[in-house]
Length: 306
View (cartoon, rainbow, N blue to C red):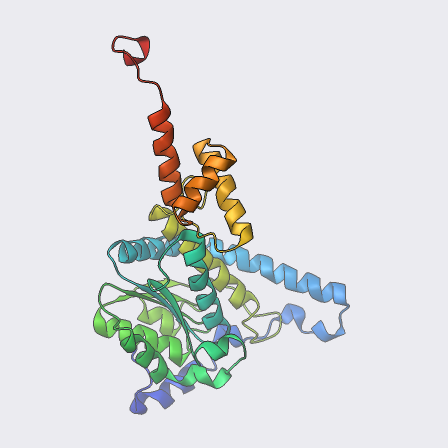
């Protein structure tokens, strides 16, 4: 069942039922004396809980795989992928979406991050923006979200109105609905087709979900996008054959990659990359075509033809 939030007659009831029950708001007994510990002890406690976050993601890999397959189908079919979230969740969603074009050469308008409060919220926290569900609806409708698209709603508590509104619009238009949350019984998880809900437990500092909550969200997002790009053929072996060399470092990385995969020398590789206007995949195809053309013709009847 999809939970449609923010209607006047339901909002007060939903908020009163959900806020006290959120597991992400609980206090961690093991760090109740955190303010009395040494610096080394504080860091050790954080590190121990971060290890728990890694294990929590490992426990939801089947759901991650389902989501990756769904998103692969969406993008292969010409659809778009929108990460929708507020605060830390929104920033992480925007971060991962922004890094896909230079890493995998995928069009920036096919995978996009939407954050409550708009681009300004990337640099400075706008905490009240997460309650503005209508802004999420407006942003997705302005982008003409449709049935070929997918919304990945991100919220550690699973109760953020902005993220919930993203799934609401997706439901209305028939788009795919995926949730990333730390509460498998949250409204966000229940509203999604696929819920990725690692159990991270309470935070080292109660309610500070930029910690384990943010860590698992980052892990899930980069795992999702990487798996999807591999499935779409944007990687050869474990090499970024579709990267966009927009800096000196990336240009050098592209040259080394092309030399290793084609066997060509540096001068030939550089010439191909320049002729391809920096398109690594095209340059690699050129180099391989040149290599095939340079191979000597075999005479019929030789051992290699048998």
